[in-house]
Amino acid sequence: MHLLESWVRFSLADNLEIPRTSQVNQANSLILLKILVILCVEYLKGKGAQINVANKFSKQFVSTDDVDGQDEELITERPKTEIFYESPKKIISYNTSPDINMSASINPYQGCEHGCVYCYARNSHEYWGFSSGLDFETKIIVKKNAPQLLERTFLSLNYKPQVIMLSGNTDCYQPLERKFKLTREILSICLKYLHPVAIITKNSLILRDVDLLKELAEQNLVQVVFSITSQDESLRRILEPRTASARKKFEAMRILNEEGIPAGIMNAPIIPSLNHHEIPSILKEAAKNGARFAGYTVVRLNGQIQKIFKDWLIKNFPARADKVWHQIQQLHGGQVNDSEFGRRVSGAGETSRIINQLFLAAKRKYFKNEALANLDCSKFRKGGNYTLF
Image (tube, rainbow, N blue to C red):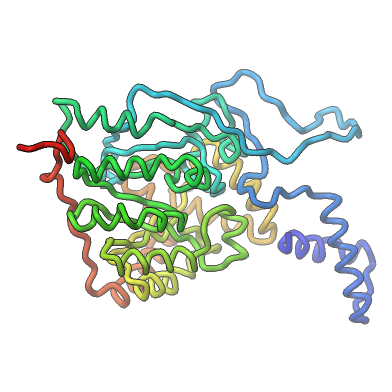
């Protein structure tokens, strides 16, 4: 809201003829402007997306824009989290993207309460009949049978072990995990069958499962990556509002590494003119907390995320919006989206070069002994802990 206040102050001060000579008058003016902002803009705190966008698979869409210009008030309520249950027949997803080191992944949840406004997974929510906007953060699909499906897969005679990623789409430690504990159950099954697993998360809830992770690490069966975007709390609260703070994630990183659980950092996504300048300080703090490895990706706005992100950008950074948007376009050959393997995660052009040089310089300085060992697939046991031979 403070960003909106700044915009209103600079935009409307002259029209409102606000006195500028008295500190008292200036203070009163700011109060007035705050009231104007509250009356004019209903910003949903704790949510990344501020709108719902049309589902490309739906023929109809409910819009809050009145094309006839009627002055009747639109009554809307703050969206609450709804839970939907799904019983899939398979739980492991496979992909062939060269941009991802692991081709197998498990997503116990679809949709994510973390609410990261830039999240590439938003578009997948349209396959469930929902919007990739606010629906993605408030209509969460839970696969309650995920652990049972995984064990059934491990028992299949045709199954060949490979590193499984938790999760390839949405965060396996999002807030609802506290209640459902599906990720913990999945880790228990991986431990039972000695199956390797890699985890990427933006949440410090992972510390709950240190006991399981430690046993997996002793067998070289687990790696953890913390996705950290910014150390600026004022930015994080609006960019990815329900994720853990950078401080909590660094603390979790330290604890895991001290317990012998290899943990590293993915500084992602890099958004030019919003967080790219933080790369050196973030990598420095990660190394300080024992990070074994570091990587990054740049932002790309595929599908409907373009509309969601641009709406968010204008509402929060109106003076900087055009600059940020154009620099994102520079990363992807004039577009904000990119489907070309390699370039879509690292970008291209001058802006990409600057980001890459900044990252590599920081990495050379703080990660001189980077070590990322391959996880061990040879220990997998189809019969679990009860196999005698």
